[in-house]
Length: 363
Length: 196
Image (cartoon, rainbow over all chains, first blue to last red; front, side, top):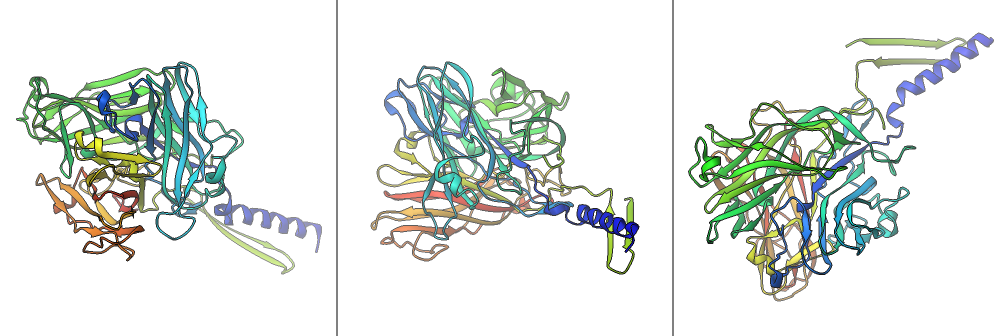
């Protein structure tokens, strides 16, 4: 064969390998799953202090107002882990392989704030099975911190050794010092490649390009003050008291994000579905329906932000005024819908359109 | 969509390589589901704040401290559509198609029972629907009647109730737990809106 022929042959092989085996290339991409601290729950109640096991203050954070440490569980809501039908194609990965795992905390004392990932994995087929632990990690010093549960690409301990098994459940178990709070938490679960760490391993943010709808359950809301009932119809304010009001806070679970947390996001078409009371025009101002708004905290600055008030739509729901679109310029550590409601009123659930990060090209 | 088709033939009959590339094709199209929602039993809560006093959570589990207790476990699906889509159905933000709900329970007592059922708020009628109850027992998937002497871990598969008009903003499952019974975790398969 001539030199020209050999050269053409090599070119053909290189070109073919580039185009025909693209799906075989590794990806560093991950599904970022964020949660409000409100979705954490204390292990046990503190009735002598008036604190129970759920959202003690009707807050989007989980605060420990007690005088000693309290242990809480923060369940990872593992959903929206999509597969791809693009030129890089793969199915849904349901493993514990992760790029990052984080807990945003406020430390109000000098006691270390400690968290540890605890998972049930499908290592064996039998239901239930063993618990797998990551390494416990801590932060100290009064103020806001982000506690990273993955260090040097590793959960550590038995969880790292078994992370390719299917997730049955993952909790972050945290010991919250007095006067401290879990503000938010989350994980970036690998999409299609084990140990999906890239050379620039630090968490990245990205501005939005996509959007999707999100639906949340009324029964996921927590309350403070009047007694509430949680059930198949949502969360109902039904207690008795001197002023007949309760604060109800419903955590917003954003969609799974492609690889990065999200700056410059937006919320549109936020609808809160309610029952009870005597809703109508202006009801949010006269107590005939709940008075609600979206609030969130900026992850880096720790600044609490809030939207305008939901107003009654004659089609039968409360809605965030459609103009302007609610902009969430900085990455949020937590988001929620906060309401002041009255006895007999019920939160059924919410829907909204939320922006997403762009589909990034392999990183 | 612009298509480039190429053919490179290496002379001498030793190799022949053909390729076809869609330049407009995307590398990642996140439309492969279903949406699996997997959560710990710790995401369940008591039916009232007062009854939280009888609830104990631990590493990957929840159960009553004394006597029996009902827990409510909302199923959170996050986005209702595949990535970057806002749906092509009439109500993509709240239509729901559940393929399966499987809850794994532990029962450490031979004298008490543990059972669960699925529920949903029917959006259009402001009413609720419930699926049939399944008890944990020696049969994987559960039993339709109580097996009080059973101890151990097992799954219960919960039939999901029919929702009029297929729209809801509040759904999940509830479990009635005797003393010594625990919810460990649940896995739910949901078809996104649209499905691809």
